[in-house]
View 1 (cartoon, rainbow, N blue to C red):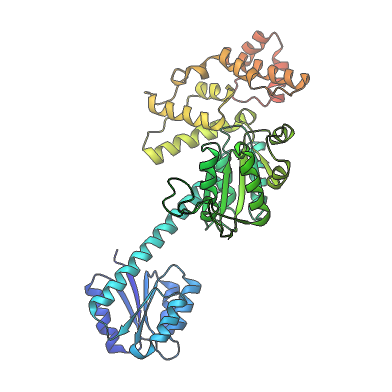
View 2 (cartoon, rainbow, N blue to C red):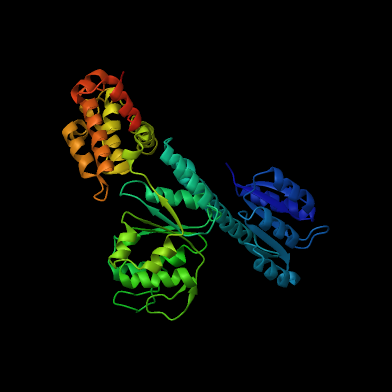
Length: 459
């Protein structure tokens, strides 16, 4: 589809000549002598570039420019002006005009300027599409689940996102902390600004400091040029610090200062840089325990822990397993073209009964493995990884995952729930057989299934 140009000039003969020139160059041109009609045309039509004369009756080129920049900031505006109005053209550039050409100009000069404006328009269009794709992929709807825990999580994210308050996301590895951080960003007023992330555990303290705050040329060996850090790159948007519990004591102090004063200096620099960011941090550590042992600063913890969003492990929201499995299978089809195969009811029963020590990340990997290696129309029990099929391994993982601080009653309940699931797997999810294996009545088994919210069983 040809690029769309809106051409505005009250000199009709000049307008006709320019229309022919631009049309011959392959552009789709709408030429209007009345600037007021041109502004009305913008409301109804797709336009890539506006070219307007500066001096016109009713509305000037500057009026047109101001209207376009206010209402259609993604459209570049090219100003045409007579030699005696260069000062006005320079002023227009200050107001956001893409370029100006002075009459009389050569055809090549105008076409080159239009070409550059079209390149900018295309880059802005691609950026808009990319941003919309990111927003669609990582918005609130990207959090998959219908369990009570997920409904509570989405409610917290929805209430926290509009503010600029610091958010601390807690939870085991693999529960989707970065996904929640992105959902917070894209549901916030900062959605059109950068989302910048860094894993604090992936880099040693010296490199991490440079990545966070940037550095000046010559500040250390290998610093051959000035580099902006993640704080600067995230200006106006959101900075996500994953594994915040791994920060060294020195970096904890520097981060605390940024949170308090919203200023910092690059490594090796003296210039004070102000930043406007929304900070979201995440950790799989027990930060209050880290504070108690002296590994994490108490004042920094309270600065981070303004809004805490805990993520539940997958074993605590088993009813979401079928939804997540279907979501990951569909994602593989969309991203990689891998054919989607539904899980058989028996295979889904095994997935729902498993303890998932690696949480949602582990489930995603298992789904990908099954989609790639399964040969039939359905993913069967035989297609599942050995650790999913082995009920003894399932029971062991359930016990190993028990927190050491649980009291006896809570511990026994967790073990009882694991035993019930193990019996269901061994009984092919037939309740009567499972009750016999456990040495209890069917009615008592049904009570425990309801108590522990164990789904995917046959009566």
